[in-house]
Length: 242
Image 1 (cartoon, rainbow, N blue to C red):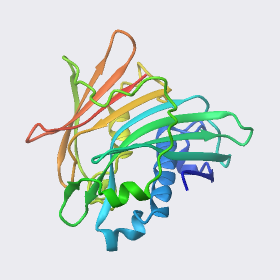
Image 2 (image 1 turned 90 degrees about the vertical axis):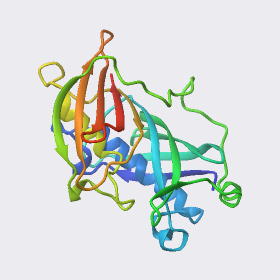
Image 3 (image 1 turned 60 degrees about the vertical axis):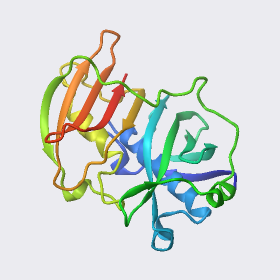
Image 4 (image 1 turned 120 degrees about the horizontal axis):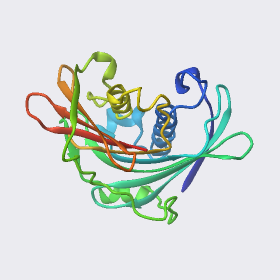
């Protein structure tokens, strides 16, 4: 199945306080259909006991056009745009029940050995199973290597909790958006439903790690949140919002 299309409902956990689909809700739904598509080819969550493999996302680029309300039925479509020996590039689009475009995204994924705790190359067997579709949702390639701002303000520290951890035994990718939003001053941005989101993940954060969260507001109106390990100063993620 080159292209997968499924219907999903906007759940209560997907909306913001204004009863609008949040960016975290969008990414949750996109993460869900990406997992379902991978499972069709034998590399899904329920196959991990045989393959010992899971998927780790390295980049998101998200553009949101509209924000449906709770219980709206969405049509979500995904496909693998490109596969290399190391990465799978996946695009995803969402339409509402009136066929209005809700959001588009492109993303970059790598395989992770959940028992060894290490990243893996993508085998020729997997590349043969995964079909690719030569269709990109963005005119330009997204920036896979976001740069840390020259000046950022330290905002807070946070100790990673059990609730943050997913089946790969590290912080789930969409939780970094929560950490970023906690760093953004509400006096500057009362509505945190930014239309453009870019995230680069660098090093995994695990249970008990203490992260330091930094905030920068650029002259052209972009918010940049940098998340680092407190003790080792390793970069966990950079989130750019506008």
